Amino acid sequence: MGETNGGHDEGRLWTVDEHLTDILRQLTPLEPIDVPLLDAQGCVLAEDVTVPVALPPFDNSSMDGYAVRVADLAGVRDGSPRVLDVIGDIAAGDATLPTVHPGQAARIMTGAPLPPGADAVVPVEWTDAGRGGGPATTMRAHSADPSGATGQVRVHRSATAGAHVRPRGSDVAAGELALGSGTLVGPPQISLLAAIGRARVRVRPRPRVVVISTGSELVPPGEPLTPGSIHDSNSFALTAAARDAGALAYRADTVTDDAEALRDAIEDHLGRADVLVTSGGVSVGAYDVVKEALSGGPFGGAGAFGAAGAFGAVDSFGAAGSSGAVGSSGTAGSSGAAGSGDGGGADGGAGSGDGKGGSGDRDRGGSGDSGGAAGAGGASSSGGGAAASGSGGSGVDFRRLAMQPGKPQGFGLLGPARVPLLALPGNPVSSYVSFELFVRPVVRTLMGMTPVHRPVVRARCVEAVTRSPLGRRQFLRARHHGDGTVTPVGGAGSHLVKALAHANALIVVPEETTDVAAGTDVDVVLLT
Ligand SMILES: Nc1nc2c(c(=O)[nH]1)N[C@H]1C(S)=C(S)[C@@H](COP(=O)(O)OP(=O)(O)OC[C@H]3O[C@@H](n4cnc5c(N)ncnc54)[C@H](O)[C@@H]3O)O[C@H]1N2
Ligand code: MOO
Image 1 (cartoon, rainbow, N blue to C red):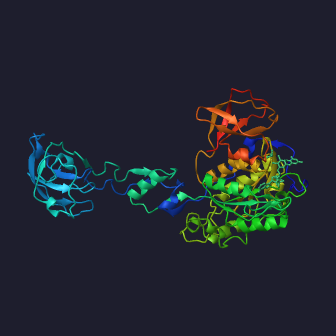
Image 2 (cartoon, rainbow, N blue to C red):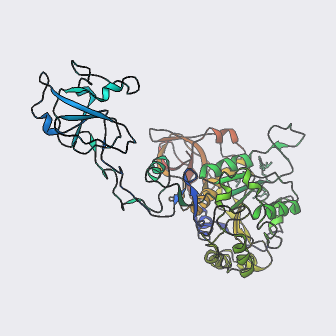
């Protein structure tokens, strides 16, 4: 489909960095939403969380033992114990506390409030546990022997004031900042949020990524191959990669090399996606369907807005994720024509999510501003910007990049909601490498995460690399070892999925380099 390029400038080679910069500058993070605490895992906080009440909320015991008055234990040592009267049990959760008077002790459990009068706790191991004799190792269970909560206890060691007491506020004081906006929420953060009583928090949601593979030769895994067909691996790899990047990823049905069918599929998914990813059909062949489909007119997304989201099937908090009212997107649609460059101010209802909306649409409140940038960028970056932003094209720009694999790429913002679409090349290694370099940063940008890129380290390449294409940045599959060395795996072929599956890194061979001698330090992108 060499002629169906929508008038875009396919003549020049874009650098990897130019393409990446062009994509990222057109994005704004998704509008924050309130989610139940566990759904915040892996997301970035979009609020400063302050502590409503001190932690711990009251002085409490850090040991199972006896709450005592230190003055009663002055001079106590092994062989010369002090006998105290036990006035009762205090368990964690008890609200009514006995007062410990001179000569008395209260049996106390870990986490139980320190009773009035007591100023320290002695562990049960420093006492006879009320049994008489030497130091005990355990307490008797109250249920088995309630008498342990009364009678007398021998204490074999003295204590200092505050011993084995966790003072109120010693963890965090009321009014203190618990976690700042921008914090990545992992299990320890969820621990703190729960401890301070937060059932819901405000986070940037996980983007809903829809992956569509194209190609009439594709057969799903599990079905037998017919002559000329191959199993579709890209949509699985890309869906997995999107999940790995933090997205809620949905693998759509594969589309044959039929531009109309692909347009329908894209139109269908547009309203329930924050990112669309296609694989295949972006080169110069006669059946390069993605290019053909995306060089048609603008996408409306009309049918999709408000459509019930089939996405809910994989979207564990899809309903909660829909922060925007349908009406607000309607506003965006009516005020900003697709690809017009102003993007419309899709801000009505931003952040107004009640967590109950349908999963058909998630408000893209930031798209008004970014839309403007997108329009301008289309004009300046592609040379054919008018075509990209308003001449009836879909808004997707097809480019050739100075990289290997991953030379042909498409990027644009579709429909009134300006949903980013990344059209990746079909070769399996090319599509995966393209995902890591371009789509992963998109997902992370939308989530408000930093850094958006995979880490890059220097490592000593233990084997020579030859014939890297001059003028193209090569990303060679490799294994990075703990000792700071890296070994290429397989060759440069973009069809080598086995080598990819055995790699954990990509060696970066710069554009101007064709050969790397064994023992040379190279940049390595770490994939895990
Ligand atoms: N004359 C030229 N031919 C090609 C060029 C070029 O510059 N001039 N570029 C080559 C490069 S580089 C790439 S990369 C590919 C990209 O092609 P497409 O994006 O159009 O991809 P397809 O033609 O649809 O497929 C390429 C290859 O990958 C296989 N494939 C596609 N989809 C899947 C899938 N979901 N799972 C597994 N394998 C898939 C497909 O069967 C082909 O073998 O173009 C080169 N050609
Ligand atoms: O760019 Mo292709 O991705 O070299 O195989």
